[in-house]
Image 1 (cartoon, rainbow, N blue to C red):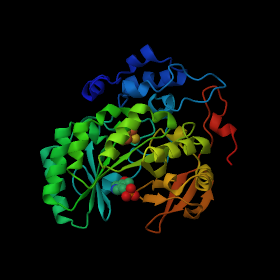
Image 2: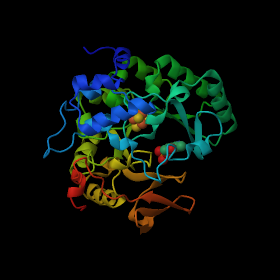
Image 3: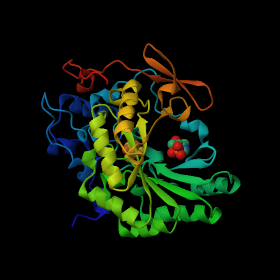
Image 4: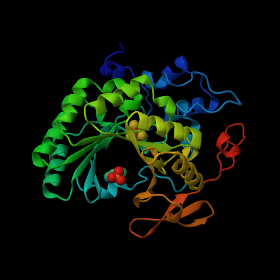
Length: 379
Ligand SMILES: *Cc1c(COP(=O)(O)O)cnc(C)c1O
Ligand code: SF4
């Protein structure tokens, strides 16, 4: 029997000095913490469970990168920003009519329930959230959101996001669901959480029984690699689905983590077997210090072609990107590319305007050799 989720949450590894006790770090990884100590601006945390999925020693010279390590152990590359990157890559601030809510698409709003996460994924811009953005919504913020929903009946769906809403206790989450439901009985909920993947014991019977009372409620999670589909995470999924809560998955396409057709096929087959519908495959956001994770669009298109020809329709996600500079979410096909220049793609936004996504030169590892991704030629 594993420890209660609360205890596991409390015992997360959040102090950089704890890491070397367990993991042998590379020079690039160590260099991150030396700089981070001076700047104090980037979040780092991992659950013991998720850390246990990673190898404790870095891969040898001819071994493939560890897809779990790369998702939670930072490297000095996070301090390398390119000019087109930003700490608000989706321009969310300009679509926020009330505090902690983003209303960008007509029929759905996104609520930033908390900035805290079980694991701070190294490719995510939310790892910059600190201080006030990290706490749970306060009473006035909940009121503001509820009032807005009362006035805006075009909104049919509320997405609870963050951060990870399941960092909060059941009571706090239920209070929010209840207040919204009282104002708008017709609202559909979507709960975005990575706890299934990083702290699967969070999906307790009590939680699911509570969530069921607020049906229709969909859960969206984020499996990025087949290694994450353990017996415990499968059990968490089964608890939800058996009790009638549909589960969708959003995978982020990440260099040297899952940017191979084979890896993605295994992942999406396994998800469909677990009764999780692969919903989106996201091109990574243009967040500061994440260039080393981005995969060229060209390669994404090639991967999608392979997936479509090899997998059942229910196992194939939609390839999409959140266009930098506030262009919104956009499905990616070869037709979405208007032109390609030196270092960028010109993409058509939903509004007909052009948005630019970087087409980056290969990154190099510390020893100057091209990273393993770039050794292969794109198919
Ligand atoms: C991603 C997102 C949504 C949901 O978009 P879907 O295509 O319905 O999954 C809603 N609001 C915001 C602000 C988003 O970023
Ligand atoms: S991807 Fe999700 S769980 Fe990971 S840091 Fe970002 S918001 Fe948190």
